[in-house]
Image (cartoon, rainbow, N blue to C red):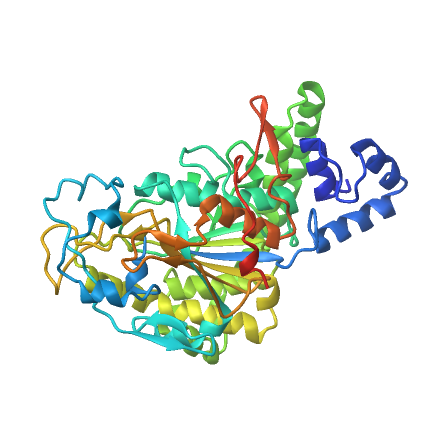
Length: 479
């Protein structure tokens, strides 16, 4: 059966007009004149996006779980360094709430970064010496230094960044994109998740890449770093490909009969997932065979890229998935939650992520893929400018800080070599051009050709969207 074009499916769900300004009935009448016109419409919808011309075809999101310290990586604050050891001024804090981990401290001593900063590229971006490889690609990056969130703890913070809500149960960003734009490769999922192996830190649970109230087929599929990249994909011993095909055909026939009797639309999801699993039995070994890459690739990404499950290997895997048409690729790298021992901890984290992140930018660019691939780097919030616990200039920690933090983006219609927004001299409050998480989501959807106010799904009597009832496209960061 020919699939209904993605934008027509969404028009049916939302009740909005089509991208061509037609009502649902008129659109169905006009485009229902033949299978050929439906097929052409589907192809055009995939190429041009849902509501307007897309700048990006896919997203690679390098999520740094735990909250990277913005003033130790990207947000250079000489005054904070100069006033290290002094008390956080009340005029700066302004009575804002703190977490229970440092809110009862008798003293909140300021701590500037112990790491040196330098300007890089024609853009003059200030980047910490912890990130020498990122510094080399600075002119490809757009730094958003004025991100902020209401979430002050990890669970709500990560959930907010991934789903647009602090409360569990909403669809993830990747699920929304799968739902809205579909897939460009029928042999691979539209949404793939990779988690760095053997890392500690806050737990990462499957609901973060779940489909929520959207059909289950839009949930992220996690690829693992072992011989069975996807659990329960391979056939049992004694079952060959022909036997599995016959089993699926008979099972589909039974599902069709059941669906006609009950009208259960979830059966469609079940059938599609069985079929996808069958096709993935041949496609997964191809995409996960990173050992086939030339030695020059491993030199670019670093030696860790040869070790399955490392951040470097996952970055390389992300490029291979992007090449094969996967729409949304989500990497999770835990370990940035440095309440103590920050100088050593952040040095290790930077060492694991710096070269692979920069290599991904260079690799995509050399293959002509960066222009239509949106790469995102960042965590759920930032860190405090004061020391958590007793101050020790050589070994200190930072608490959670939702008031301001930094992310960077590259490619996919983002303005390169640009820095957006500013924080105050203490890196505590936003001084100009704040970007809320809802604004971030609205901008990502815009780059993919979607009006964030029109990508909706009716559930429990109301229409939901990724940006809830908020969000504005951040136009200054668009190319």
